Image (cartoon, rainbow, N blue to C red; front, side):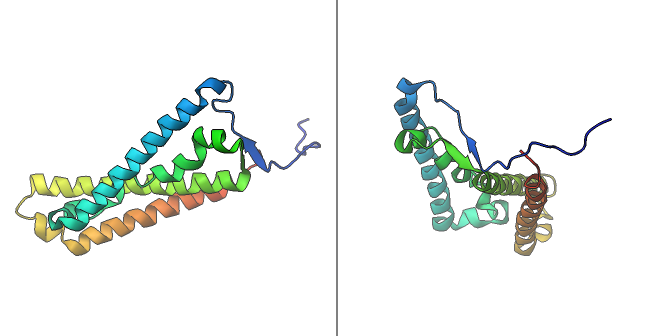
Length: 169
């Protein structure tokens, strides 16, 4: 007979991040490496946004969904990279913090995938139907595809995260 009730349960309130804990001599190197990668990523994102603002050619329907400029990286980088352990010595993340981190990361990644799909449809029209491209993919249609991408990205990950948060760890 299978027992369906657990007699010894406890609620998990935080997770211990092990990461590079055994490599004490490399922690400063890892901190600097990940800090440089993060700064370069953010500088690239700022440059893309500045180009879109400055040059009006980049705001055509092909690139109206500029949200694909790696917007998901800040959701994962700062608290999860080993450099924060060097500075704070704190190697845990709360359960709620972990779920929220997963939610934001998942929403941004899913939205980026949907936006890339919308952009590929735009490119398909530009290549295979160049004379009809401007009538099929007008500004309204472009914004509708971008809005649908955000809605689908948020909705799919909201469902996944709400189901995941009800699990026992």
